[in-house]
Structure formats: structure tokens, C-alpha cells
Image (tube, rainbow, N blue to C red; front, top):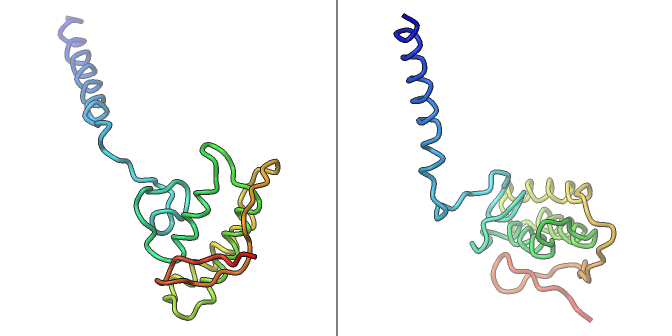
Length: 143
């Protein structure tokens, strides 16, 4: 009697476990997972979509910020300051779309509170940016 009652439950539990495990086995390593914390483009936010190119000026600034951040570490304070200043310049650029300018202002304000590694002193230029050819590849002034 117990066998007639328990057998369907045991079989259904085994089938349920097998079904729940199948999607994990179906994923391959060749499928590229997109970062879930991006707020704009390929580089703004947690993670990035490297080696994809930046989609605009703000995304290029975020890509430079990602480039000066060590793997599995925090960026330097100078790196965060540079992101804030570049985003501020983009937010004031009348050639940029209004929605991009608003997001750049948000990122500029948020760059001040980003965590940083107080020990790292990366040589990062934090001077004003002048735009070279194209709308979103700035050239840094150097002495």
C-alpha cells in the first residue's frame, strides 16, 4: 500500500530534479552572458561588453574608466575624478542629445561617490577634454 502511494511522489521528485537541472546543463561556455548592471552603452555601469566599441562620448568616457580599473579591484581616485569631469563636459555639450546630456550629468554626480582604492595613485590626466575628429573620442591636453 505504501509503495503505491510513495512511488509516484518519489518518481515525480526525481523527474522534477532532472527538469530543474536540465537548463544548467544546456548552457554552453560559448554563450556570452551580457552584464546585468549596465546603465548605458557597452561600458557604463558594472561590467562591460569589451571588445565592443563605445557607442557615444559618454560610453567612451566609461570605457576609459574601465581601462584604468584593475581586474578584480577598485579604480584610483584620479580615475573616478576623470570620469566625473569627462561626464560633466558631455553634460554641458549642446551638440549631444538631451537624454545623453542628462545621463552624463547623473554619472558626473555619481562619480564623486564611487568607491576607490586609496593606495593606488595612477598617473591619470584630469585636465579638460577637447574633442578630436568624431563626436566621441576626446584628446587630452598635454604639456
